[in-house]
Amino acid sequence: MSEAAETLDGWYSLHDFRSLDWAGWKALPAEERDATVKEFRQFLQQLDAIQSKHEGAYALYTITGQKADFVLWTMRPALEDLEEIETAFNKLRIADFTIPAYSYIGVNELSNYVRGGKADESAYENPRVRERLYPTLPKSKYFCFYPMDKRREGNDNWYMLPMEERKELMKSHGLIGRKYAGKVKQYILGSTGLDDYEWGVALLSDDALQFKKIVYEMRFDEASARYGEFGPFYVGSLLDEERLTSYLHIG
Ligand code: VOV
Image (cartoon, rainbow, N blue to C red; front, side):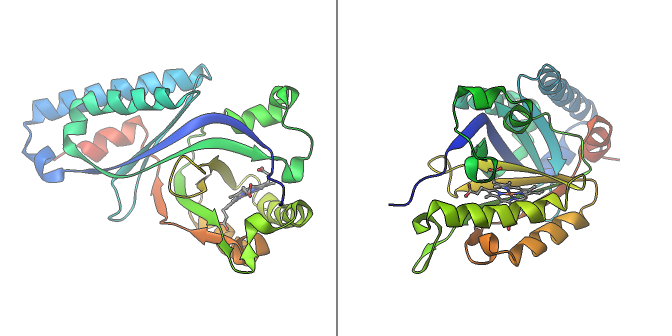
């Protein structure tokens, strides 16, 4: 039997993708729309305040194209904390004008393929590890999310490879990734047993073209070329407070 990688696991993550019922929203009287936006903004300010205290993370992005209109991305220490956020959102008036489009659950994950060492308590004290497991999400301009698996087919079975071989493959993967340091931030959300794929990959960048560049370059690397299987891609741009108001404004 090949050996499982040890993982360090941080906050739980929920990507909640929603579409807007624009017809219903447009039909609402202007003062009610204003009050609804105000309530939504107050909710987001609370999420922002929790992120400032490093007790969780939060981001809001539009989604380009028809797959959804926006994604609310939150992270918390426990799964039920995410349910609480989901429920609190559903109780807002704005939620009456949203339609669930997709969602994804995972846990911020760091494996020992490249880092080495044991996944014991002391590993969790390392500030660089903590930054990965309990991140503050930067207000990058662009967002990209997709779920993925490692293939388990015939001779191409990631889970049957010896540890040493997987380490080599992940090292090569990491070297490509390092070329994008300062351009793309990656968040690897382990989701085996939690959601439909094995990982959720979330990328943030100030240049949307870098998503295409990194994902394309990685397709030629064995870890992705031979073993990567991908779900749907979602891309969009930052929906900060100011833009939210204009985004929801009906002229
Ligand atoms: C932005 C750059 C970037 C960098 C620097 C980077 C580095 C690293 C390192 C060093 C490691 C291993 C140790 C760890 O940290 O866990 C990983 C791990 C992982 N990655 Fe990665 N990755 C990046 C980026 C990056 C991308 C763009 C993708 C999507 C792949 C693609 O083809 O679309 C990805 C996927 C993953 C996955 C699914 C894992 C877990 C695999 C497993 O079997 O456990 N990743 N990754």
